[in-house]
Image (tube, rainbow, N blue to C red; front, top):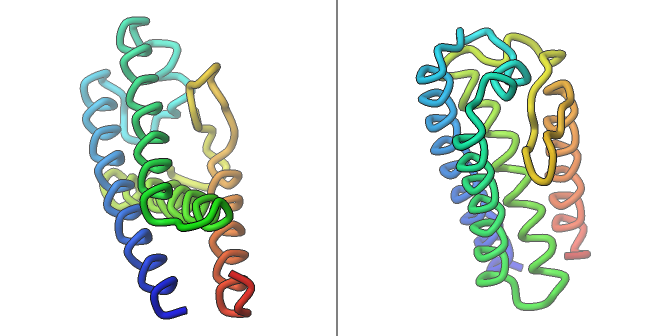
Length: 150
């Protein structure tokens, strides 16, 4: 159990650091496109040149690959690998928004519409949705861990 706790904490650190890195990249992308800090990302996708939109899609694919690889390397069973992926993904997603808020005060509120993902097509929803899903995922995994079920 101590080993599992240590792995979850290291994966949390990885996910949070990765979230901040992605947040910084998005801040630079927004500045390059001339978007105001308060602008919705939904509008940015419309203005994004197709070539750069495809490059952005490869960044997203690389993010998922990194999360899959770290889960694969740390988990021993298929169940652990799946839990580790969901745990790290949820922390990454939650702290991505936290990082953006600290850096540029975006999103201005939880009802702000965002482009959650571009692959295979743009997923568009209010920011509260991914924050809620990620928070629930983290809580469920923490409860399963504390109850000894994981």
